Length: 389
Ligand SMILES: [Zn+2]
Image 1 (cartoon, rainbow, N blue to C red):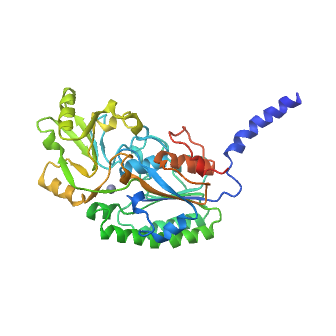
Image 2 (image 1 turned 180 degrees about the vertical axis):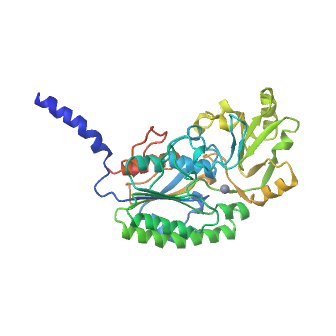
Image 3 (image 1 turned 90 degrees about the vertical axis):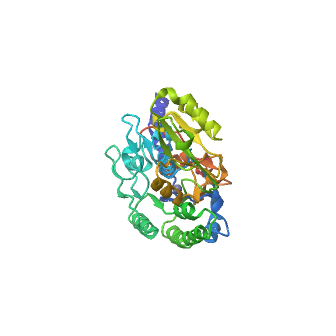
């Protein structure tokens, strides 16, 4: 009888113990720098952050395919695969009504619970700055503090927002900052302009982080990004490749989605794309490791260009001009392409060397640190090397 009672007590207490954060646990800060590739983070480009990383852990984040800003950030935030969270690229064609969603950065595009919602539901005081998809409440739940994205806001405002939130007791802060994406697109990822931006980020972020570490003992920091960037050598114009076949196109840079207007055209489209030297899969044939083909938002055919080639959807000279403007560098390739990997620095958590981390493991790791319970288990899992022993 006594043993029975003890077992019953253990059964009640165990789940609570497993979810409670460790005694030395401080708040968690996740910062994403748009487009900052693992190959851009070096002692010569970002010396101060590199020195800080020596006190912590450094690896790379493997982005989802296609490696784009909205897909990447929603994967980081939900811990789920693109085919589950639904933000399959920066834009897509809505399967239910064929409506073009040119910017899938709204909360209503997200089909799985973001970390800031799970955290809020778990009683964790959470602040979110400019993160993709943090544009309003999700299923009626908004974090303690949220500043939705507006263009033209300097990174300093994001750091001030984060500093204020931490000072006022936030346990989880997620901030999206400008990174090196714009310079990489306009001038190329190895251009003097991009290198100058990396040095500016380093000079701004490193001393600020040092200050935050001093103010908040036990602070755990993840520095990462949505994707990397690669210089462009060549363009393939998809409307020319598919001339005479009625389709809608959503191009992302190194990859694209094709939406057929006549379902019978699929084989013809695949044949034309293959003949043009591109990889192309019918949606159901997309390799399962990309976790993409389960979403009808990706259309009928998924196209992938060789690294260094970008895909154009321009149907007018004006569209052509605006596309070319940002194509000194591009992304949206697969995670196997080394330049697509994002930087990753973890400070204040884990032990031993860190291997490359899939983007969908980041939110589950932060959730494990803070004892956050998900409404539905995410696809990713906490990174073992980052958990307390
Ligand atoms: Zn970009």
